[in-house]
Image (tube, rainbow over all chains, first blue to last red):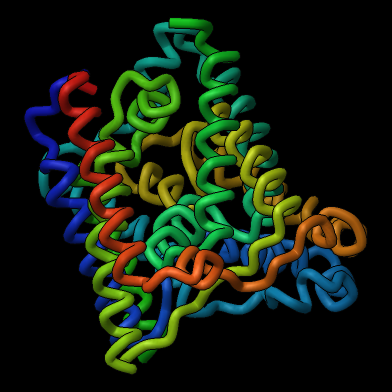
Length: 170
Length: 174
């Protein structure tokens, strides 16, 4: 295990985020989630180039390209992380993560290409499962939803499999 | 107002994720390589607190649960596909934005890929509705609902199981 002297205890931070999730449900009735926002975002981007697409595809009619609670929640994650990183002198521009560099070298183009490709697959899967590690993993498991347990098992099984393929047995 | 609360909730969540250092690729892959389970510690602590809080609110009539439908084909297949992509990109949808916020610019490629993935999915949705989404559709079920057990008993059992998992992780020094 790598020691992070500057990081907060993950149990404390995790429990606080759990309280945040409960407060969110109490105040607005909203459960944490992130991946639907990517559908809305994709719809907004597509609307610029061809407005017909957004009004004809049933999935964009189901998840309309509008700014809603979750869209701002996801935007907030970006801002909150930026704020915390700056406040605690943790902000670091980095195009190639450390463990990736050890395995594949410093090429930023290759890393970007794999991240892009992985992103396509991950989001397709998340939308098929109807949630990501926030919606299914955190909110689903917290509500004891059967779909949460099944999806989370899939997330980690697929992830461990791919990590093994990328980094080898170690 | 609701939008503003959403933004504030996100800011606090992003702050906590960053402070626990769970946003970065190295931590996400550390978990998937079973070498550094920091994100599992974060998630399980979150879940233990949230399941008690949410069911308390629900019992008191102060909130409504919002359970996603269980469809074996979609949950399992989608989950597996997500996992395979997650192992490549090293960020999940929520943490990708946070990782970008702390300066990990490869997350931007991941985010663009995710937007493309959402566009691809939108074009497959009608076909999936007639196939994968019909495989094992059980509706919006929970563990207490499916087993007939009282929800507090299920919560107590799961909390005990999660604590045991966390103790095992700590003993192994992960």
